Image (cartoon, rainbow, N blue to C red; front, side):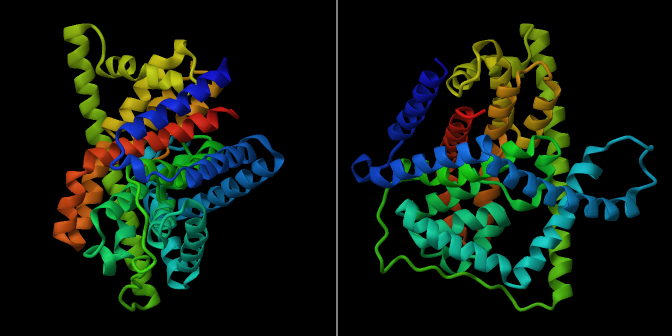
Length: 392
């Protein structure tokens, strides 16, 4: 029964994607089948083998060590604020982003990340049947972030056609930046975070290939990566440290606002209808949770958490998931994979704003297909959760 629901879930995801396709005749099925098979193999490898456990343990250990280093800086500045033994989300989860951002800047400066991003992107372009630019952008989004990635290709932004621009933005919304992966790992099981990162990379190509199918001419398939202005090492380091701090502050502000607003709306709904807003959303999203492989008795709660992510952000939903200790381990695993992406309403503004900052006309184009971006990115998360659920 479990596998029948999984197959049904995958078929429904593809059906929902197919309905939204811009040109059904241009869909190329061979790369799609190959990428789905790759997703299943990678999910099995990461979740069901000793090799996968070793890889995830290694990645988790690296981030654990990095977060310990980050804690040194946080404690030096804020150590006197906390009572001993207490945990504060802002200090413990968000401020380490500053250190991770600085580390990314150093790896950028010494040309390690550009090399990795470019050549992994080139390999991916052979698998997904898409252009070099799209493949580069997907890998770069997973490392640099959904707004910063567009700066690296700003030489091309003004001449990218609408159909290719959609794919670039969809990749950015379907992934998460490396600077906050460590923060996710403090809330969710690292096993599910790493699995989601890998599956979303291919899922983004799969969904975009159906919603927005096209063939890139060889003459158009040019990748021009912006190196940025030449800076001294310490200029660069200061810039990345401040960027990391801005991200931490923005996430903190959004959490304060969204958590408070959701609490207020829950209170109003409970007063009028006797049921909270999140519970109401849970009933709406329960069928979606069910086709992900979640038992029906837990589907309403899981659906509520999934909906919370869409209307607010992934951090709010992750903290909500942490509160539901009654959920089974399998449900927690599937929902965790679903939550690891930037697929929410606020990301539409972030991405269109980032593009608009580089080219106003192109930013307006992105804003116009914003809801379709969110639709596609949510289907990516749904597909990743279903595939991961086979092995959880």
